[in-house]
Image 1 (tube, helix red, strand yellow):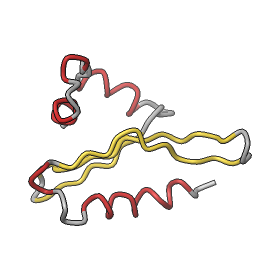
Image 2 (spheres, rainbow, N blue to C red; image 1 turned 90 degrees about the horizontal axis):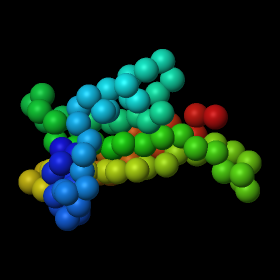
Image 3 (cartoon, one colour; image 1 turned 90 degrees about the vertical axis):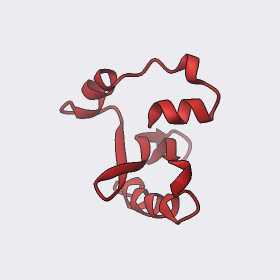
Image 4 (tube, rainbow, N blue to C red; image 1 turned 180 degrees about the vertical axis):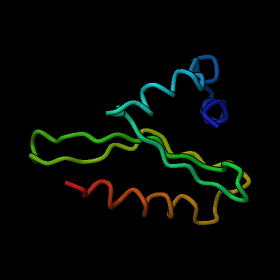
Length: 94
C-alpha cells in the first residue's frame, strides 16, 4: 500500500521503502513509528503511519500522523474517520 500511496501522490520514483526497511524501525523494543492497519475480510485496505512527538511551546506530548492511506475503492465509507478515532486516544496517552 505504501507504493500505492506514492503512486497516488506522483512520488513513485522516490519510494524506495521495502518491507525489510519497515521491519526494524516498527518492531524493535522502542519503535520509532507505529502503524494502524485497516482490514476487510482479512485483507489490508488502509493504513496510518504515525509517531509520538513533543511540543516545546505547549510543553506536552502529541502524535504526528505521517500518512493515512485508504485504497481508492474503500474511500468515502468512513474508514478514515474510524482510523482517526482510534488514533485520538493514543495522542492523549500522556
